Image 1 (cartoon, rainbow, N blue to C red):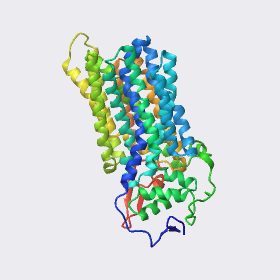
Image 2 (tube, rainbow, N blue to C red):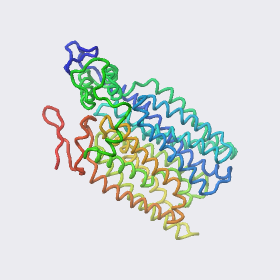
Image 3 (tube, rainbow, N blue to C red):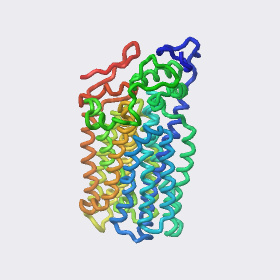
Image 4 (cartoon, rainbow, N blue to C red):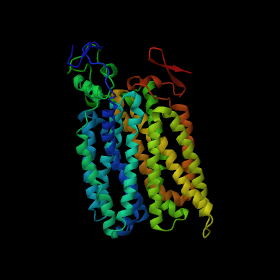
Length: 511
């Protein structure tokens, strides 16, 4: 018998009876990991207001400003691409610390920037940190959380992104009172403070139990599972499921083992993902890339980054009014992300995605129509169009936040098999950041070419196509153990459902 109370998967008689709810520890771990997402949200929010001050102070053109706004997401591809291999090598926890270190250095560089090349170097360093944080936080949370609360806990990164955005908007409002050459530097540089605090706080977290199992550290993995499960029996069951998924025989129960046929630090993963994937893995990869593409290509970053510009086009002439309206966007986005997080385990991923994307389509269509009406009637005050524009910006971020925002990270962090999870999730994050960067760097040009109303009608078309994709290709994953998730995929149809037998076992059926 091993020191953690298992002999061939059987619970020892000496194990204590069921204890109280242990989900609070998993809750605390999820919060600490997800708080790294604040750094991305803060950068998005603060740049929306700082942009006009940076443009005036550094004498930037519209093209330079577009590149500055969106380039962080392109730079984050470096971090996202490296995060999968890094987290398989040094672990999930230290990868989160590394993300905080990069963003800390990047924020200081941006805050002290004296010219355009200098600030771009800061964006590059911060972008690497953002890429690491965006990929690793939801993966870590999904691997620590029990299946019953995985959706709720895995939604936390999106909550903290929105908290960061709101903090960025508030920072814009207060630091805008300073002289122009100081205001934007304080806005960007102060982001170093939460980065270093988070990097230190994350050291208090345990390592992911699934990563520990892959290293052969079964005793350490059990200790983490014991702290995040309601009973020791549940912890043992979860450990046995992870061992089975990792190809470890059930009778190997020592605290430290040599994992049979273990591939080192992610070796062979890209081949299994991209070159010779099984039908189920191929379906999983398509689902992951599709949902990440839809989340960004439907225009959320255009609204978040360029809210003051949109409100200016809608008829709000005062900079103070534009910034206040932008703060309102941040408040609405944060409130509704909390709603989405609280109901994701009740209503399921698929239902929220379909509801969210449908609401986004209606909001974008109305926003595009109202902005087109304003654009075609210069010199006239169309109160109905102004009111509709402001309202539909709010409804767009609200409907995004109840589904497409949080569920994207939940879904893609839970569907990959354990050995492919880190690097598979990193591919989705890379596409997400690429699309975000493209939208951020082209929106001003797109709005000039198609008109700003036409740009949002284009985003509405993307949202409609995304709804069809979600309806057709994405099966429901609510309540499924991570180790059984692969059974839902492979038929390229969402028409699979999960039944629960009298014995409590989940059975997947095709229809």
